[in-house]
Length: 314
Image (cartoon, helix red, strand yellow):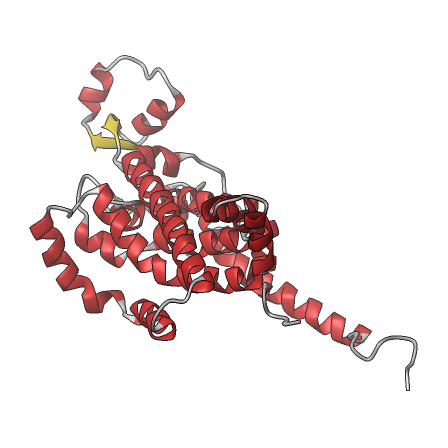
């Protein structure tokens, strides 16, 4: 028997198997993302070539098409125009087209930022208060209420899409930022309450009692004692809420058209001349991935701790 290591410590062979599985999983996961990023730097012809081109000449045609609206013109009209002043105008002219103005992508992207971060903030704010109340106070029928809150998360969006559409049309909340923020907050709130209640339960009540003995009010003890201790859980919950709000597609398609339309329903509508403009779609998808990736990287130190918090009971 090998007594040089603890029985709880994995063997060298087990570590190698685990490392191999992780590497394979990482490679398989990154292949689609890498292909999307690369497609954003291809020309339209290169993107639809068969067999697919792995080595290609980089082009910013996809990003130019994403941020501009263009129209095809005759050679006589193009010859009558002054020389292009910028590199992207020259690129568009090489395709026998002219730029007619900016595209709608930036406004849709901004809508995603406003709605996604707004819904995440409200979900965390309300979820933290509700989770603290369920954790610290004697709430009648607490278990039943907690189950009811969780059950709202079990509904598939399509099951409530029609009632919500009718309600929003009557209230005038359709195609508005505040309407989408409220809807995403309601959907995320059940998850936020359940996750944050577990974090609140792990914070000893004695900390607050000691603070209140020293003269703190309940609110002061909550903001100065409980919140700093729950930062890990709040960060982990914020990531999950943000991912849902950022990626949500069904409600965005049904309830928005112009003013509050987000990027997910807009990106598939990018159509090029003679077919789908895959480089522009790939460029939009790449830019769409960045905020969530940055948000997750910034809070990555809290994510693993937040997921495992409370897993081991003393």
